[in-house]
Length: 442
Image (cartoon, helix red, strand yellow):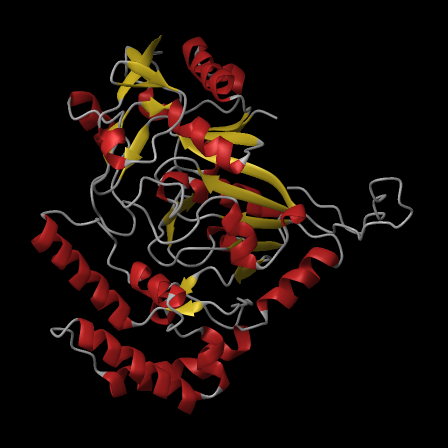
């Protein structure tokens, strides 16, 4: 993890003698490069072992990160998965939307600090609205978006419409907060007449949370600034969801409601881009997707079923089976264009152990013409013909490998093929569920 501590001021450009202010500590960022479920939590857990601070910058409890340590499996939805290290401080930034019952269900208590910036609050009625909206989409258009029904879309919509409520509002003046809560609830009831909201009951519950959450809350911008410009610190940022689920750059409209790419780190934590250091992209050795939406390399056949079964591809948050397909390097290169990955973590390589040959998507054709970009339009993306290169499999168990040299030759070639086509080095290779199953190359 990169850090700079107290640096000498840099010289100003154009020959000016005025120095630039020192940059301070730099954060290390871990981001998903596909449609999520790549194994980000495992990489964060690995890096968090000597970290001082772990951060979440966007999303909500629609995220699901699984970490296995000493044969114990931990599932996280709101807390950064690096919190397994008892020495780290967890920071939940303003870009995250907070469902307080969900936060406390994950075990938040006063034994560690969890500063909450002016994060938007997710209420139970947001989750109910999410379900109603999905039902309406199904009835009106014959298909829904496949949301997690955790209220994430409705609360980000309220934030953009400037009608939402934030954690700082809850703690400031509960009487004023209650009035605004009632107005917001009535607005939703007006839009969705079937919606049932126990306004007074919900307010009573929220009032109980005030004293529990108050000791953990800090002003996020000030807290982050102090962390960046104080003594040297190792600061880790865990992205939720992934590049192809980004509200701007993902496969819209089948995306999440926040920016899961590197720009969301700055806006979701209140920090400048000059403090972004290493950016690690996490890539599964094949591709998966939960819910509906275009999936060019999907294998709706025995290969897809084998990957789903061997990889135990079931969503942590929803319990839905994940759709599976070959690794698509067009997607990965697109994610790299946006995020500027400095290295990759290639996870779940062991799932490919039984295949005699492995296909990798390297280009897209539309109307028999190779296209140089990733299509923004869903209809065009559905028409894409993936161009594959076929690589030989290795037909042997890689799960016991603990170094690159211990991998079969064809598995090594697979890793190098990914590096060469994306133009980014692979720093870690995952060959199992545990922390010890992550092979570090450099």
